Length: 152
Image (cartoon, rainbow, N blue to C red; front, top):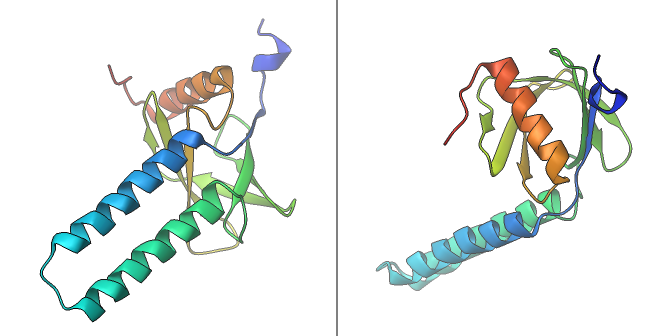
């Protein structure tokens, strides 16, 4: 008989991730550095730099500040196909997990199809986004459901 803490539904509350912040700064900063090395007109470099900076601002707002219509602060999984995503405003969205999701010992990227929308909603979960026990349990449950083998 399993204990109550391992019973379904499985709940996760997300918190800002310093690892994700570092990755986003590294990737966007690298793109800006590469941009400097290209031989392009100055006006085009400025336009691309603004686009890269806007991308960084949007990602930081969504994944670290949990602001905006697509920001998710938590999720509830019933153990089957039903997921419920908790938004920052308190609204709950019913969703289905898509097969394009990615599970790794350090990173989980869950792609959801929201019932009330045609768009996909990705959710990035780093090891420091949730407590280590919940991260391990979520990784294990997702591998069991998707049939994916653990990455060594």
